[in-house]
Image 1 (cartoon, rainbow, N blue to C red):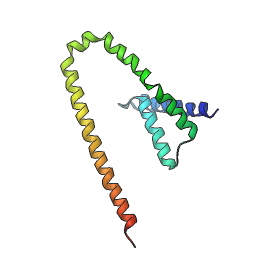
Image 2: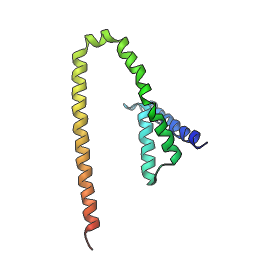
Image 3: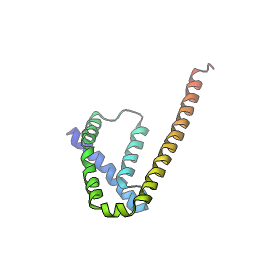
Image 4: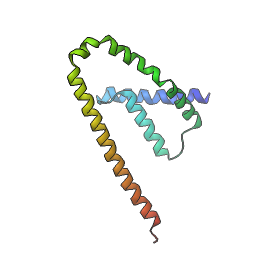
Length: 126
């Protein structure tokens, strides 16, 4: 029963994300918004998620590869379109990859600096 409740929590998070996406016309997909909200709620609780939620999430992640099958079939079905627009697609892939790496590095650098300040505050005698 705990796994069913956990699956319901994951679906509810996706539903809330989808509702926000449609209501506010946000540029992110609903499931991404829902998972971000679920992550925020779990972080704000400041404790470990329920074991059933972890078990359910890990079970779904095990089958994540199957979700890429329709995308792969879509690529094969649209090969002519991809051949016609290969250069803009390649540029978009390279630029978005470089942008993602840059943003990730900057965020990591900021978090490491923040972590050093927290450690210094804890170690400094008062």
